[in-house]
Length: 422
Figure 1 (cartoon, rainbow, N blue to C red):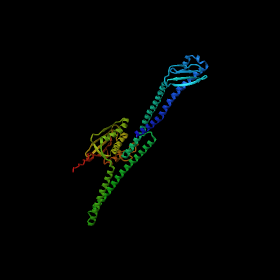
Figure 2: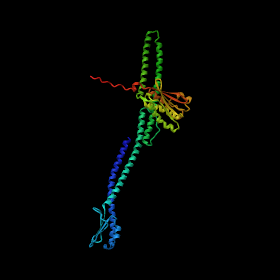
Figure 3: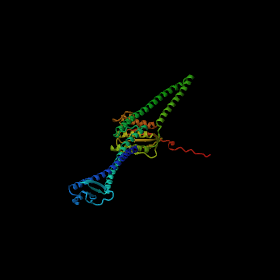
Figure 4: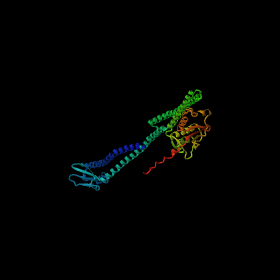
C-alpha cells in the first residue's frame, strides 16, 4: 500500500516537474536573451542622445567607452563620414542591436554571443536545480504522506484480521485521521460485541449440556427401576428405553465434541515460547512506562495444539489484568505437565479479594471500573481450543492455563508415497 501511494505521488510530482520545468527552462533561456538585447538597446539610446547633442566627429572616445560594455563594440556610421568603431572585436555571430540617429546615421552595438550563452546556461541550470529540489521536496512529502496513510491502513487491516482470527481486544490507539479513527471505533465495538457473543455461546452450551445431562441421568435412574419390574413386558420396554437413552447420551457427547472441534478448527502446533514472546513484547512497554517489569520463562520445544490468535488473546487478557489490577513484576511462564502444557501468569500484587475469588471469571465482575469481560473472555477462548483456565492462587495472584499438547501427526510430516516401478 505504501509503495503504491508513494509511486502515484511521485508520478504526479514527476509529471508536474516535466510539464513546468521544460517550458520554464525555455522561457528563462529566451528571457535572458531579451534582457541582454534590451540592455544593448538602452545603451544605444544613451549614445544616440549624446550624438544628437554634438557633432559625431567631435565625440570624446573616453566618454563613449563609458556607455559601451567592456566586451562590446560600438560602430558609428554617419552620412559623409567614415565608419568608426570603438571596443574589441566581438567575434563571429555576436549579439547585435542597431539604432538610427540624426539624418541617415546608424549606431550598432555588438557583444560576444558566448557571454549571453553563459548567462543563459547559468540561469537555466538554476531553474533546473530548483525543479530538482522541488522533486526532492515532493519525494519527501510523498514518503511522509505514504507512511502517514499506509501505516494506519495497515494497522486497521491487521486489527480486522486479528478480529476475524478471534482476537477481540479493543485498541485505544488512534491515528488522528477521522475516517480511519471511525473504522477503529467500529472495530472496537464489533470486538466487544463478538467477545460477549462468544461468552454467551460458551455459557449457553455449558448450561444446555448440564441441563440435558441432569435430565438424562434422572431418566436413566427411573428406567433402571422399571427394568427390575416383575412384569416382563414392562422390563422389555424399560430396557429398550435405556438403550435409547444411552444413544441419546452418546449423540449429546458427539454434538458437544463437534461443537468443540468446530471452535478449534484453526488449532495448529504453536511454539509456546515464540507465541508468548509476541505477547510479552506487546505488553512490556506499558509495564515499563508504569515502572514495572515483565518476565518470560518458557523453555524451548513446548508445542501446543491451539489457535495462535486465541492463546495470544487469552494470555494478553491475563497480562492486561495484571497490569491494571496487579502490582510488581509480571511473570509469564510455561512448563510441561503430565499430559498437558501449563502456562502461568502471575504478579506480586495484593491479589484478589476473598469475596471475588469464586466469581473472578464471571462476566461483569471487576475489582475496579473495568468492563469485567477480559477474564471471562480469556476462559472462553482457552476452552474453545480444548484447554482450561483456572485461578490457581489468589494472593499473590496466579492464573494457570492448561493446553493440549501437539499430536505426533501434527509435527511429523506424512511420508511421501513411493512409486513402484513397473
